[in-house]
Length: 404
Image (cartoon, rainbow, N blue to C red; front, side, top):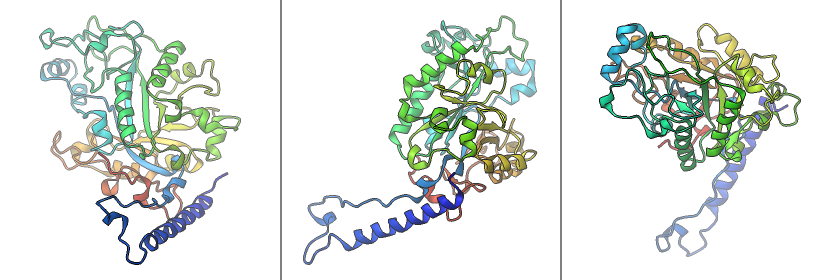
């Protein structure tokens, strides 16, 4: 078992080694009467990069900000008015818009995104939304093709920055390749296959998520990401009997072993968890980490949306080794009031992923006219986890690469 003390000792050793490397670099290369490499013919100076002590941190020892419904775009006015006529309160909760995923990862310094997914094996199931004005023209042609679609609700709230799963993941992959030293990006998957809460006649009937459909989703993920770009349940379980045994043994990968990678998490509890486990009782060969209850063999990740009510439980879970996602705000309540109490509770809880509708740098200023913004102190992309990180951990080392 790797303890916080062990990690702290390694960080101290890494820092000492870094100081030694820098000292040698300062002393070498400047022989009598010679110019430095950077002064000869305009050639760049070559130096040896110091080791990053934060590379010894495990995935469960960091904290990042994420976005809720990261794909979401608000409906145009005519569609919003139709929705508001059916349920004004619900319509008002669907007026936020996120930028492209690459912009969220770059300018907004997000390291967790959320995608709502609909199965569409034959293609075209969601190509003609009920509220859409025919004069607006057809949707993205990709909506007519077979494959998983990304949207909030069929017919009424379907506008997305990336309408297909493959398109969303390709954008993340391209950004990741351009920024290979980022901390792991978590991609939360929420399976959707239910009817609308709005009384829309002739609404599209979603295809049910079956084990075979989930196999297809895994295949789509692997069509974008190679195995060495993924953190999977198999990677974490290793030689342990179960995934939960590995988690309780603090077997999450270190940042040194996982920078530039992504991992996938299932937001849904039952029955989707059991469907995904069919034929894979220990998540063998699967990609998603399931939202299981502690004590179940596949338990590793827990979603707890309310850090005020569940703060103590979140702190206990992360101390044991579980990964937790919570929410800094919901349904525009806190951002409208400019109330940061829930955000502060989320950050203090130690949840590794704190999700928001209003990340930095702008927060809710444009949409709601308040100064509410959910970001880490110093607008960092990642920081030392306030509950699990060892003493001596430096927030500035967790992710040094400037977001762009």
